[in-house]
Length: 414
Ligand code: ARG
Image 1 (tube, rainbow, N blue to C red):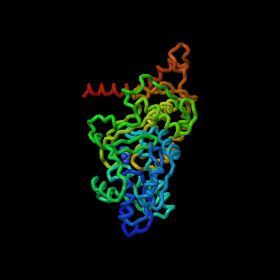
Image 2 (cartoon, protein in one colour):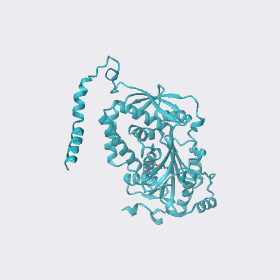
Image 3 (cartoon, rainbow, N blue to C red):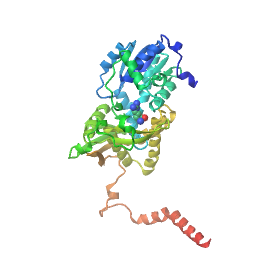
Image 4 (tube, protein in one colour):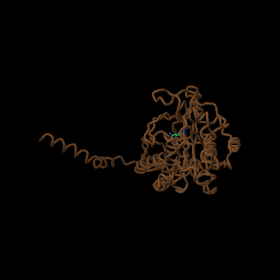
């Protein structure tokens, strides 16, 4: 059953439609032609807009048609991405290995979903995508795709074609495929963040070069005065920036600009990939870092300490499931049910200070806060019954005291 998913036979694809997830870069442009040539299939290309900066979708479409596709789809999934993928991640305070806000990982199940939807609509026998055989993205796309429709086959040309870099460029050259200027880094981006890999970054002992960053100012050159931002959450979802209501996409976009200007959101992470590799990843996530910090702070304020402890475990598992390509595993629904329940009370406003690469929470306000000034204050008006502490401490420390004393006695006797 497993084998049947991959490496379909050439004769099975002849004159049949195949849907390619097409980003417009060298790899997917080359495969667009290679698929037609190798399998004699009809290629249908699909590009999904999720907030990649500076991508000209019209131009991509024209290029796809020029390279022989039968049909091209451009899908605007920006709001869907924010609402169905990023909002759940914010509610889960999702950081893989405590560091990576998962923007690339979150996008893959969405891309796979569209590839399968189009494949079903067009009666395609296979989908194809540009992932290498070394990364996490293939895990995420393939699992989502074969879970949604086990009958549709998957082609990973980078794994199949056996080209070395120079051979791929030579192939592109001889087939009239435009070759973009060689970039030092491999970039994957969407509204929630930017992943930067390759080049110098493959040496984890070296500080990332300045030219790797595009969304964030070098903190040394960031403004000398701090800037304050206020984020308002309703049921765990950010709904206002500085008191102004806006949709999620716009809010994240604006926050990326503000926080990026202050150098917030640079992440240098030696990461454990699902396929076993450790790899050095560089990320820029100005808005994501601020949103998760703010959300986590507010959530902590409205939850009991027992809920906070337990939710930390749930959040970690959520991030892992997302990273590991298990988006459609029912455990995700189970975790989301708990996360949504907790988030019903995550309502309020958090104030943060952005300054020279840092985002710090400096205030929070909510009707749901489990904070009571009258209980907490050191002023004379406190209603906290301090005498009650004596009895509490006596019982709270009972076993600690007993076990220490018993150990001491027994050690002296033996
Ligand atoms: N390491 C990150 C992840 O696995 C980023 C991957 C970026 N993808 C890419 N094709 N460059 O989620």
